[in-house]
Image (tube, rainbow, N blue to C red; front, side):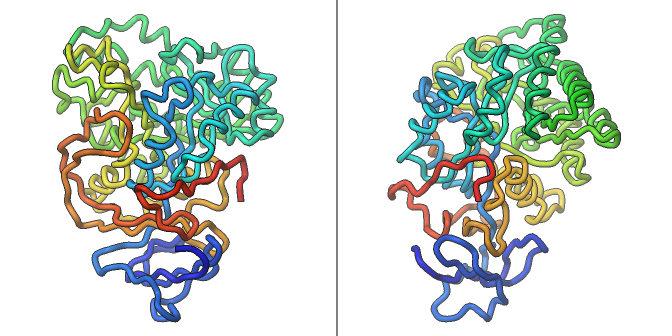
Amino acid sequence: MSGSFVVRARRVVLPAGEQPAAVHVSDGVVTAVTGYEQAGHDPVTLDDDEVLLPGLVDSHVHVNEPGRTEWEGFASATRAAAAGGVTTIVDMPLNSIPPTVSVEALHVKREAAAGQVRVDVAFWGGAVPGNAEQLAPLLAAGAVGVKCFLLDSGVPEFPPLDDDQLRAALTALAAVDGLLIAHCEDDGVIAAAPDPDGASYPAFLASRPGAAEETAIGRLIAAARDTGARVHVVHLADADALPMLRAARADGVRISVETCPHYLTFSAEEVPDGDTAFKCCPPIREARHRSALWTALAAGDVDLVGSDHSPCTVELKRLDVGDFGLAWGGIAGLQVALPAVWTGARARGVGLGDVVRWMSAAPAALAGLPAKGGIAVGKDADLVAFAPDQRWHVGALQHRNPVTPYAGRELTGVVRRTWLRGQVIEPDGAPLGRLLGRGSA
């Protein structure tokens, strides 16, 4: 469907709250939001058990194309995103070859994506040793910000920053008010921890202690305070880091933080030994961390939820031997991020408005995408018909490789239809997505 139309529902999640409404769309943009009865002729009317949400924005997705497309590619990742109500993803700069650490590499990534994306795609650049002078040009070329690691990333072409290199990157970014997002674990702490031992999940957890996150976050806070730059902590798993983050914000440090659906859904106590589908870094921690992360989201101490969709081939997960030391660390969860978070939120009495803020409005703001993140006049008509009470068991998903810790899990909430700029995304239809740049309107 294109041109002008109206979609209405008894429950619409708007920036001001949830209410009955009619959303008027013309040329892919929301032109008015009126009362339910002011829908005009022949509106699209959602079923009574459906809620109209804005399309989600997932600011943490590893697509891996080109170079490791067998892990995940733009066609499969964006098909999974659309099926999960995600209408915009922001692609991470590593695991693809070349990594997105220069303007030339950004062009390679955009060329690889062109013509095959079913949702809109923006791109993070990368900060690695020696490329500080590339960061401002990357932003000027359209990257929404830059990502760094504070320990070994797991791929040799994307090395970590030491403290001097971190400050050099932040100094370059502060000059153009650019954003640095950081994987915060500390090599030194992990080197002093026990090695992961085969199939034992407790041993794997002990090999990447919470202190590794806390030490690295402390390094990031210190560098951000010294340079005045904007920074963001990705995939927080260790709730014990929250007090230092809260204190840094109170001191005026410009720092934000995300967590992930898997940290809100699973706990270390329930991870079976040998089930390497659960391996990610930082790891899924004990239930007390899960509980504290939910509390922090409600309090605003954690700003948003990103999937950290980081799949690989079945072989790299080493399910054959169940060895957490050998397996690739990454969770495949892009398609189930919304129902996973909603299942947990619903059980805790948290409403859809909060979930939309964490998974649409806040990541759109983080990535500087003003046309995304809500149902409001002037924004893209990215919409989702969501059945919040329907239960289902996770089966086959749309991403390239089938390994996921969500397999067989019962979740609540089903995406029934997704619109991108006013057009329904058909699973086998023509790709409708666009490639976005920093500040895309």
